[in-house]
Length: 281
Image 1 (cartoon, rainbow, N blue to C red):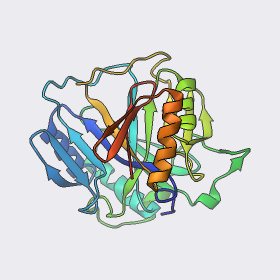
Image 2: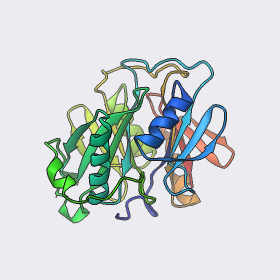
Image 3: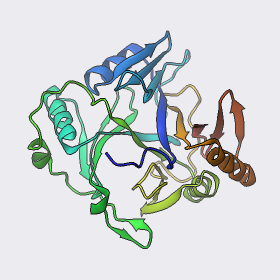
């Protein structure tokens, strides 16, 4: 795995999602996804792959309601596997369980797509080596074409034992109501660079990754944030290399007029569509 998710880059560290039935969600994330439970309380469960680092947190609000349709919020969070062989093991596991999924080749990566029991979107992918990516005028070439499933399966016959210990949160993809305003927030505010465009979508990163964050208006232009107690995204973290880098971003956010609040050892902001972000070091 390359160095796009470590200093000096800014990247997604942890995603917190709301679910309707915590125990049902834990069963899925253990048995289908292959996470381990790091910590469990009455209404929350923290998930890990290495027994130390938080990757995904599940939360069941007391008054939770099902996922709202056509709103801003989570499209998917994306779990990055270390290698194509690891993707082969996961793909074979999905085929054996019979769990429904989709698949795509994006030139820069090979990806599988599924939903958890509450409709939260998940991508599981592996990156092609960055020297194989094609860049033109500062934009990386990405597309959605048919996945070579047979070629992937031929990479490994290893038995599935859960997610590899060095699995990480690769990126997050969000529904927004206004693409231009969201892109301005993530570039001028948070300091990301736009590195690719799809119809009604933009892909943003630091350090020339293909994307740490993606935004789209595929749910419709002008969609609003979902109710706070709805299944879906609660918040996600952006990990900064040091305090100086975070301070620079805080100043940029304030200059844009974006909300910024300090909570303990981290700061919280929200994008123009209400997606909440914790800025951590």
